Length: 292
Image 1: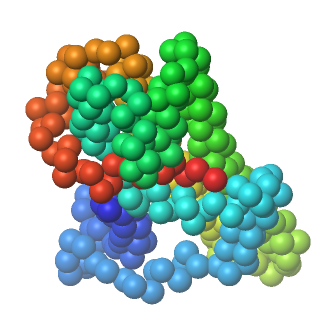
Image 2 (image 1 turned 180 degrees about the vertical axis):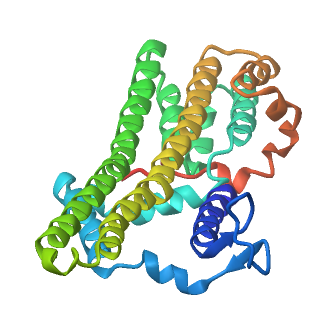
């Protein structure tokens, strides 16, 4: 479970709601009649609620996203959340351990003996990579195929993250649209002869839509796009390790040297804790992060 995403999102919402209902009586302008430094007024939340503003911002943002992307991408939205929340899906140590084991098997029994190991893999990319060297393909062609697979996968992931970037861009824009709608209605309804109407209340209602747009962009859609790119980076790293390991196995490198070589893809802290690789076996064979 990706606890940092959940904790960060919940914390942002809690801080926002507390900011809406709290009055902090500190400083030279604090009222002398205040009974406490911090006062809570739950009814203040109603100052930030406006049904028409919610309808404009959320409705128009969703409509534009639907209009901008094909159904195949929109149908993957539930998968995107599953990828974001699964923090243990891509474990580099799992693949390093597997590759070292394959290297030992290949040195003892030859590359053809890896076919059985390939059929045991749940990760389709890993299985494809093993089968390419079992079939005695040219090393340059094997690397080209695998690297092209990684590039295309990363491009698809970037398109998925771009969908949330689009939503993050249009939400504040429709917040401003809602503000303009509110201002236009306010100006048209002003009664000059009776003092200009409820200017403050009408202005507050108009500005609420901008608030909703910023919340959607920076609390909801922005973190989703960032997390999808982080998961893509994790998956790309695992696949780069697979490519380098498979090419080394095909060239007959020593398993111990192979381990040291693949560990260079990881930070020193991860190398120091490399004993956890076997524990990550269940999570290591996952499929594509956000793949369609």
